[in-house]
Image (tube, rainbow, N blue to C red; front, side):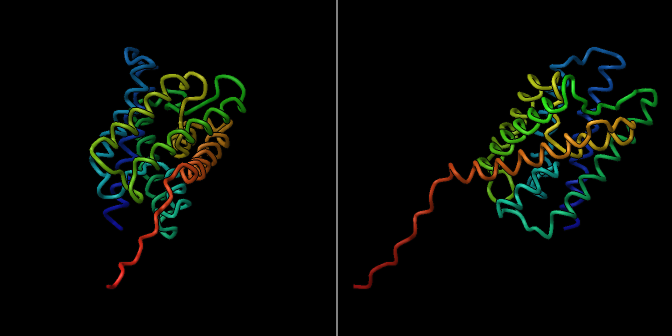
Length: 223
């Protein structure tokens, strides 16, 4: 368990340091662009899946961990330790970014560009799609095959490309929580905590509906 928690903490740290760091660097110096930010999030998730996926499953997201538990692919007793590790990694990344860019007002926090319910609906739907893909390409609570990282990273980059300007395309409660708390920009934070969790749980039900039925094995006949 210690290895798994360290892997989750570091993976989540890398996700926020690179992803929200790209937002901060773009705001401060320019050059990264919205496309670059979206690709950074997708690529860092891809890298962490390959780096720690065989250790912890590379959840990097409390909504993913809760959904795996709801799908009975992950022990319920491990949910809180995993979420704790993810929180530690996320807050360490945001605190490091704050020390590097003390004048940045948001540290990459996700904020609605329009109405909060618009962003809530976007976040719920984006996480539904992401979690559905994760459930369909995973075995147990771990990714399967060499293309799993590409698939998950591509979905994250794709969704960030078109939805980022609207809601920030968080899809991850700790990705929104850590920079919001550290920067003090906690308005509408509830939407970014609730919507991804609900979306991930809805994906569990959807994945169950499209799952191939298990064919019972017939006992061999004794001649």
